[in-house]
Length: 534
Image 1 (cartoon, rainbow, N blue to C red):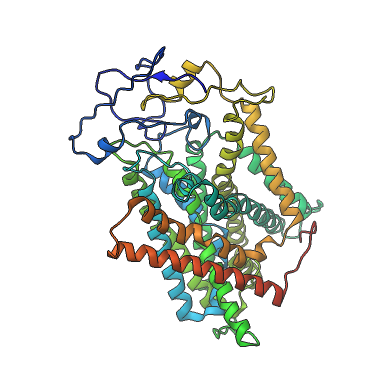
Image 2: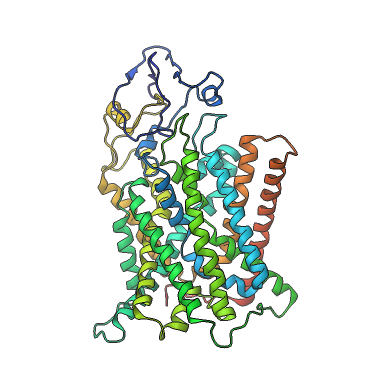
């Protein structure tokens, strides 16, 4: 056990912490000194009424000093606009391109109903997570989805329930982005050259490598707040290519011989499982919940200005734009192509297949470029939780030998003031943070590891329905149970009933979707091509 440090003075201080701070770096005004005896901990005095529930709850917050060195919580000067950029960049992506494929199974009526219900359900559970970020009961801030899950369900159960879905939603999405980004790079090259280039074009594996190298280079930005500009560019390009695709598709009109009759399987069982597998594709498109707490962790917060207010404002802006992209893209795409929408690539592939010759090469090239830029931007925000996990393993390692390029282990069991920030803790600890060389190596390892998986398992996108079922509880079920556990609403009240119904329905739906995904894979097969991307 390490030293315990005395906290505070008798002067009034505002509530600031590495988890609840209105500015990332504060002046070293507070006196922090070793205590020779039993530490005296003075409670911060607030300027709010004595009856404030936050004042009663947040008498002392034990904080992890390592948070100031990790990429998610290193900088806390975000705002509602940053939150909107990050949320929009993670909320719209390549998964939106296959929503029209779901309509080929569900048809017009059930397709629109399912899409609307999935959107509203996700928006509700997202609201729950925003409110759960700061607990007035325990005085804790949960800056990562896994932290909230562990605090709610217990560490062991949380690992069984959420570790794999969250890991896939981070690492698996980055692999899928490399596959889509590399393939789109090849399409962009073909559009630009137009068959006139004499140079030998790169192979698809080389395009994967080119895209990965660009993503690794961009990943050297240190923390989540520092990529706000990248997320803004990603959000603009996502909105751009979604709009371009559905506008061009609608303007060009319906393809010849288009049919809106839902595709039916040969047997009743096959038809049922096809429907459930399609629901998995729809729900997989509404992912990103594993990033909401991380995004909110970059925002300042105190008694008078809780981060939930700014975060929800940013979410409302972002999801207004998300709806403006997803609904026209899915509905307009199905109207234009009907059952002819390609399962592989969805609307992007349909645009090139059906309108590659009668559409301006500039539009096709711009659409491809937007997809590439958005994939690069999305890679950063989806990869940030993994960067955070990898760096935390070394930063939090205390009693074991560390690699030579790291600083010495810091002492454990440290109690610090609520207003203590990274600069204050470092000034006391007299240790530097991990070098940029170290972070470069770790992030490069992750990026090229994803490249290896993308080359080894290029058919990963074909498992979207199955993976959607596995990841569905993270988005639609767990937040409801977390709300019930943390907020403890009165039994049989409307909010209590709503969360129980949605939570249980989400878990049941997840089980059915996983079974349906496995059945469809076995029944129809998947074109397996290990180390053979095409």
